[in-house]
Image (cartoon, rainbow, N blue to C red; front, side, top):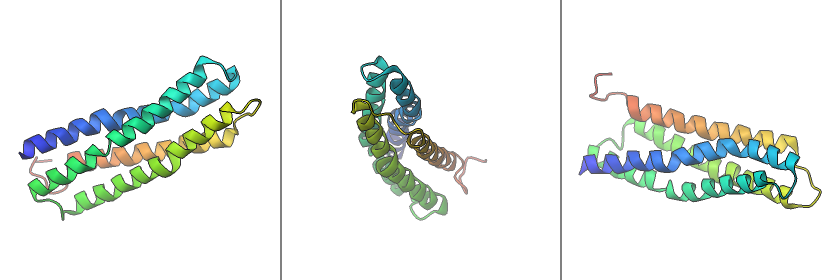
Length: 155
């Protein structure tokens, strides 16, 4: 059962979190292209699509910690420091996504939809920074999951 839980956890992380990190990273550049091309440009449709990918896969990504907890419980590592750190970093990443990245994307899309309104360059840069923080948090969690101090992998 542990192998099944771990397999679903890893697959969910790859399938759900991967698209969010890529789409969120592409979004600020898509907004800049849409702003320079005008409100009816295909680049605006691209920005909307990237935001939708982020929203949908963020919800799908909730499966990752659910199966992560089930796997950790099955392995008996719920009280290990590396796992507690990973849980904290995962919560931080989810918070950055839910409170900063997704609302930031929505705000920029609203600005683009307003006729004659240009998007503040600083807002796009801030969104890119928040997205970078989200991506780094997930990278650290991934590294912790691979290295896991005290593991029996011999590393």
